[in-house]
Image (cartoon, rainbow, N blue to C red; front, side, top):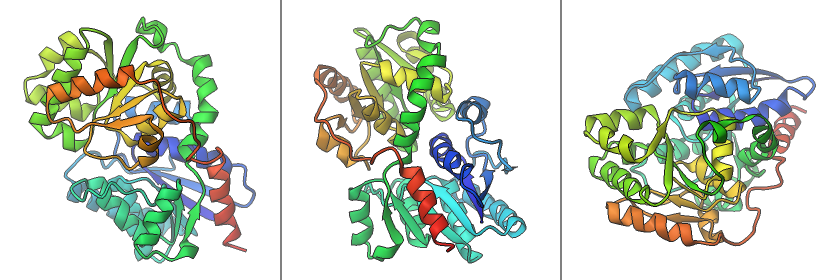
Length: 363
């Protein structure tokens, strides 16, 4: 059996690492890895393949950044060429990026079976491009691997047939269990940045809804700057966020108050997450990783797909509409004592269940 896996962004590299590790141990299965190039910066791409021990991509399409329509269209065309050449039995797509949607569309139009890993997530905000990607990919895919019971219920409500839905758990939890100890052995980032455990806030901001709205961008970073007078704020700076800060004239002010660092590799990010007192983010993946390492999290968005984290008390959602709201949310979260214990993301064997399901479909 031949499987084409399509990735393009950092969270997808992490998910693919968990699945690829199982694929490589499965007899009679060959994986062809396609990197669309959606994240093309070396710090945001190449280092992940090295640290996560993912084989080098068989194809790097080098699409790069563009408007949503242009980027998705170029990916669709390039992925189609790969599928014509490779003629796989299955295509695996991950998450909710333009790479996800392009991979699913290219495959389904060629009548190749599509499996969507991390299916069923919903923010119920159609203004988010990720929400459109999720919904379209789910309805185009043949098999939907859901990470949580909530995701399963979302798919059922949309009329997707029961036999297409498989509750397997979250492959990012698989990765957290596997790589957490490796990070502690290998990462030196705390020493390099002179950070002490539980004495800093880790922040990540990259979503277009925050970076492309000057009012929200200002609210977030001025809120961070205010809190940074009391506790250090460390922020690996996404290229999109850097460009937005420069364009709005905020960069010089921000750099004086917040510890801005270059994007970091996965193992360094794990160490920063595990040792933070609080994580403030707009990333879906980082929200979950905070929970995996039992670090309180503040999500700077209107909503979250990971409602289980809010229900358990490990995550609070604050719309970043003003610097006062952001700083108050951070201060309140710093006083939180954690939340309920729970394991909504499975048993750490999601990848094994996914590959077992796909392999059995060929028998």
